[in-house]
Image: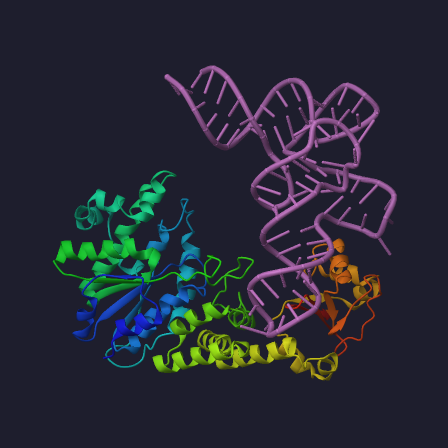
Length: 429
RNA sequence: GGGGAGAUGCCAGAGCGGCCAAUUGGGGCGGACUGUAAAUCCGUUGCGUAAGCUUCGAAGGUUCGAAUCCUUCUCUCCCCA
């Protein structure tokens, strides 16, 4: 049994915790859980932090439970929301639950030992719980004053909160109580925005069973500019689902993380020992231009979320697209399979051969002829070419009105580069 | 209920009859530098190869000409009861 709290401490993963937790965990194997909201069909990079809580928990010898909030998802957590949520249909929810559950399975060890991970869905114990039963068994034990004092509720009193969302914390509180009774769970973990919900559970267990349960939150990751971690500059989430965010995009996102942030992240996501991580950080500080941390981080996370193959492909793709040696010749020398591999995860635009031959200028090709996927308008395309921002097949374009009579790669591809980092593959069929 | 103020491009915010496709700042995008970084600097930021076209909450009107004046409507904010 390793010291879980000590591990989280050096990793910077503790925001708040119920006192006495260290002694409690020292007594022996403990069961703890984290809940995941099925409001989207995929988890994202931000969720990965609380997944890591469970992972480190299991590695310390304890038993982790990943709980999918099939029931709570039907209600909507008011935490951090300024407005009432709109309900998802039950069909969508069931679908989201299933895909999230599948994603969670990847990260924990469900197979072996006394501390093997469990995956549960709170819909299972809520679906037959009557409203009257709930009021008598749960509602009775938590005073309104207590519920109103929560930040998540307080912030919404002015703008409006429905009874339904107000009651949310009771549902999550009951989860904890239920798991305490049936799975011997004594610890709930989550992001720092969940503190109010976690303590309601602790309170309910104290009231109903006279038992001191524990709660622990990890800080919500923010970037240096204050925005939430796990989103691209344009506000797009980095999803764990490869269909929504390609492994290449995820790899690139992590590779581009700032130095300070990389230090924080490596501590959270690295499963290796403290000394190894500290050595890496030191090495990075001596020679930051190597970007050891970013590369390690990108590699570790992409491999963990996707697979080693997917990660290797993302690396190959990155070197060809960004490597300093990547010239036009290298691109033309690439085999078709190689090219498709490199381009596996960049956006593709299709155009017919005849349509291509009818396109009068490169400006049209990049805008209207390709459904404005590359450029929103001809003006924009013209401007960007004028400022040397477009390369086709790695060759810089100068004249916006030149005919697009390029030598196609393997007779059917054009690799368009917009700026330094945006690539598109035009497929001619 | 009474009285004020306002609605301008992604955002903030000038403009108050022609010189306004609309000052400036932020953001975005592109370039240089670099570590595919940060900071900095440069360019650009309605559509259109151009002539020109459509924009300043909505609809009408006055005028040779309106973001700017008039009428109505919609919405937002503030103050007093």
